[in-house]
Each structure stands twice: as C-alpha cells, then as structure tokens.
Image (cartoon, rainbow, N blue to C red; front, side, top):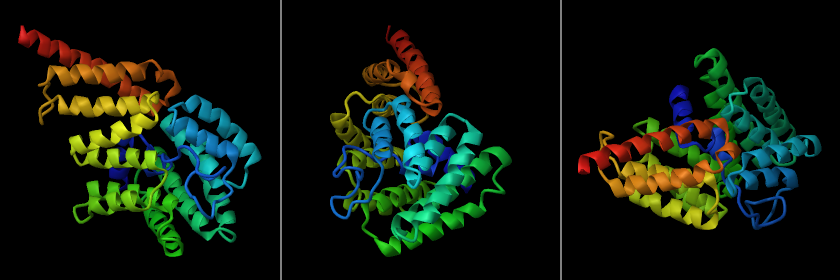
Length: 308
C-alpha cells in the first residue's frame, strides 16, 4: 500500500508523498507566524511561514529554499521547517538531506509534544511518514510499511485533542483522499468534507479540492477550484501547470487520444506560462511539466493534420 501512496503523491505534485501534499496549504497569513488559525495561534516562525508562502502562494521553490536555510538555523524548535526541507529534498531526489531533515522533523516534534500535544503529534505523524518515504526510496517497501501505523496512531492522538483544527484537517484530509483512491472501502467524501468544513486558508482549500476532484476524474468541478486558486495566485507556475493538466485531460478521450483542438491549445497556453518560471520549480514538478509541454504540442499537431 505504501508503494501506491508514494506513486499517487508524485502524480499530484503537491507533497511528493503525503507529506508534501499535506504541507501545501499555507497562504496569506491570518495572524503573524500562523497562517492556519484566527484564534489560539501557534508561534510558527516567520522564516518557516515565508517559505510556505513562497512555495504555495508564489510557486517559487528557490526563494523558499533560502527561507528554509534561515529557518533551520533560527527556528530550531519548529518541526514544520524540517518537514518542508525534507519534502523539498524528496522532490529533488536528494536522499541524504531528506533523511536528516526527516529525522529532525520527528525529534523536534517529540520535543514539542509536552507543550503543544496537537502539533507535536501531528508532526510526529509527518516525521514517521517522511522516514518511511526515505526507506521506501532507498531500501524498498518492506522496511517502510511499519511506519504507516505510526502515522495513523499520531494522527488519531492529534484528532482527539482538536478534531476541528484546520492544520490537522488539511493533513488528515489529504491522507483520507489518498486512501480513498487506493482502497475500495475508503470514501473520498470524508476528505472533501474535511477540506470544506474545517481547513484554512481558503485559497489552499481550493487547491486541495482541485486535487480531490481531479483524481476522482471530476474535471469540471476540479476546474472550478483551480480557477479559484489561480484567482488568488495568478502568477504561480505550479497552479498554471495544474490548470493545463485539467484542460489537457478534458481535451482527450478516455483512452488518451487527442480529441478537442481548442482545449489542447488552451492547455498549451498554460503550460507555456508555467515554463517561463520552470527553473523555480523543484525537479519533481519540472520533469512532468516539460513532458506535458512537449507532448501536448504533438497532440495539437496530430489533430491539426487530421483536420486538414
């Protein structure tokens, strides 16, 4: 099952595995240092927060890397900074950096737990999953499987403390969604309900719901949410790429053959926009973006030749 989760995470381009996706929700902060909560804010560091905004509002991973370098030096008690560093290293296939940052995520979360058991348990779950992702990539699935139960155990502890917490529900909602795609007895409606009822900030909820409906092949609904996300962050190349993905899917038949020249041309326009900033995206996004940008040109050429 872990292998399926990892494959899904790569396809969704948000957390690389569950962790990347689950950390993909920071936007304009509601309170300084804590972009999640309008009440009872947590003292999340300014550099950590700035890194999240750079990635998920602006789609600029290079700027985020600079902020994270500062965060792990000055905000050493914030597990979120190490989790983000690990997930970026995963996306760039820098496995030893990932391992060290995953270990720091877990140890820092353990130290945080006595004073903040909600976030401490939440990021212990993240730390265990990041360690499992590293083990899977370097040693295979057998050594990673036992990490899943630890992830679930800590998420359950966090949920008992504050079931309506927005940070928790963003992470847990994505995990529910991934399980629903891969396991027949799981329901995607549970994940969607979490996003709609409890998650924050709003523009990242739009991003989460886009991913949910896209992976359920409900492309019209997915389009509504990616349009809302782009309305808040029109220059984000990752969101531009996501919009192009949906347009390309709608422009092909179920067996993947090009069928709608207008939609494919529109998809190409969004891929072109994203390509102007491709260097500020991580390797895990650059590779599929370059591929789709090239392939959609071939599909447009094929349809144009057939039309003539």
